[in-house]
Length: 167
Image (cartoon, rainbow, N blue to C red; front, side, top):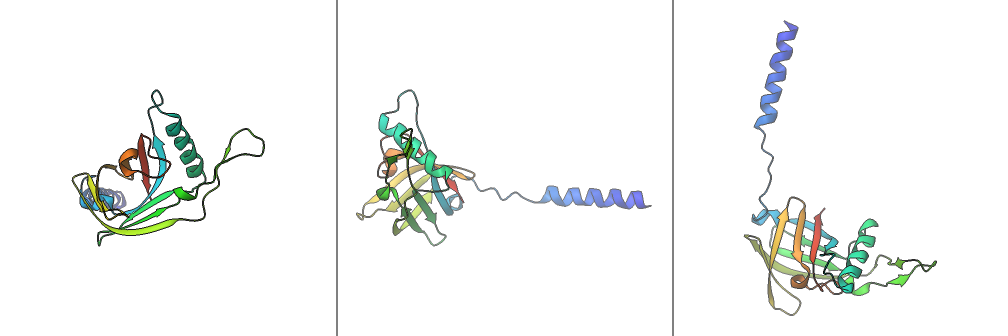
């Protein structure tokens, strides 16, 4: 009797678990972009990358390893976009041993709020110059990819793709 009850509970548990949806949002759905996204990497073609692109990749890698994010984008349900940008406050030096870069996390950030739309993989927003900007965006789960040249973040706009991770 106990064995049969255990089997029934096991089967019911499996049925309940398998009937739950995963609530996975398609990357082109307007809801896919909601939340805060931190710039974590610059993806470049190592064979053709310029020195500026390679330098930007190293800087972002160093800062991300310290949980320091130069750019954070927060997309809210009310269509507001809050941008926090510390790229203008980078202080790059050589470490004490002279063997590599020293890139401290900037403590100062510029913050801007604007409006946005996101549909079918296209992000449109109004920039600080009141110009409308439209960018192709790829969202796959918790990763968002935007062309570095299109987004035009200071010091990281030579080429490649900016990789953002969702908090």
